[in-house]
Structures are given as C-alpha cells and as structure tokens.
Image 1 (cartoon, rainbow, N blue to C red):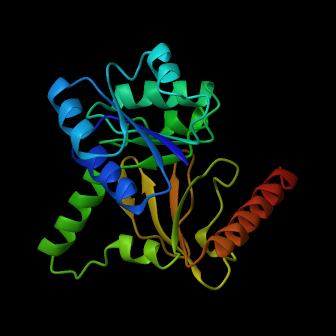
Image 2: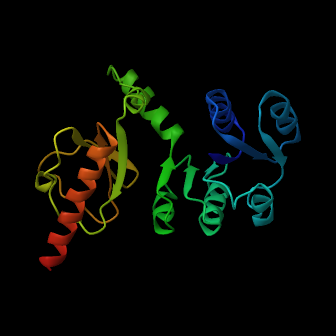
Length: 225
C-alpha cells in the first residue's frame, strides 16, 4: 500500500516509523522543515520530500495518482483541511485528517472526509478523567483486538431518542458530542441537529450492522415527515 504522510511532527513521524517497521507499505513523507526531511530520509525506508503539502503539484509529484491513502498530520488544522480536500480531488481512496479542535469536524463531513482523528482532545479527556479518579481504558487496545469507533452525524435522525436505537449486541453508543462537549447519553437523550454520535463496535462486521440500523432510522424519519 502506498501512503503519503504530510507533516512529520510527533504523530506523522510515529506513524511513519510504525508503518516502516511493519513492512508492506510504500511511504512518501512531506514536510516543509529541511532538518526533519534530512533526518528521516536517513532513518526510514521512505521517499522524503521537502515542500508545502497544500500545493497540488507537490502531491502529484509525491505520486498521489498511485497512492491508496493520504494522512494530513501537520500542526495546522486549516492546512490539514486543505490537504485532505486535495486528496479527495485527486481520488485517493482513504484520506485521514488530524484536527486539534472540533471546529472543522463538520466541514470535513460536508466535503466527504470520513476519517478524522483528534489526538489532543482524546488526550485531554483521558487526563481529565484520571484527575477525576476514573480508570480510563485506552481505546487503542480495543482497536488492536478488532473493535472500531464510529462517528456519525445526527443528519436524518435529529429528534429521535437514544432509546429508539436498536443497536446490535456488541455495539454501544458511548457519547454524544454537542457544542464541542461530549456527554454520555441515556435513553431519553434527544438528538439535535449538529450532534455527533460516537458508537463503539467490537468488530468491523458489527459496525456494518450498526450502519444498517442507522439507515433504517433515517428511512423511518423520512417516512414520518
């Protein structure tokens, strides 16, 4: 698999090192910092390009036409958004964007970017939980065993109650994000426009069942109008 990583800061570098160690990946790394590029070109089996990842010509030079995945992992949310949009326009199958805040999450959805990660928010929530005395489970352990975390917008199901969700066994609605605040829902929680739902499923196949349930809810909502 050919993967282009734009931004080789902490997360981009860690990802590149992990993929390089696993093997089976053709890596192209892009960053504007000359020293980072020089160092990684010596340490990793990867093509390292110095430049601005928001330039379409540079992405083409990096082999976007043959790439199967693009990761936008710079320190700028705005730049990552631009890079991700370019990736979609260049027909890269899997485009992953790193965001530091929730502000651009909705915009990502609007332009068809389905894979959004927010490491700073995840870390801050975990730290806050520890300070409150909770023992937090690192979701990365679940992912390694096949579990998947799904983000769903409330589009088409706004106004429905959480108790209406007949989710399959092995899946769980764990949070509703509203106005940049994540809360644990209960049966009487009523969804609003702009909400984001976080659903945990114990396998990719179970995630497909969850998607089917959500589609049925949307169809019922449309029929009831």
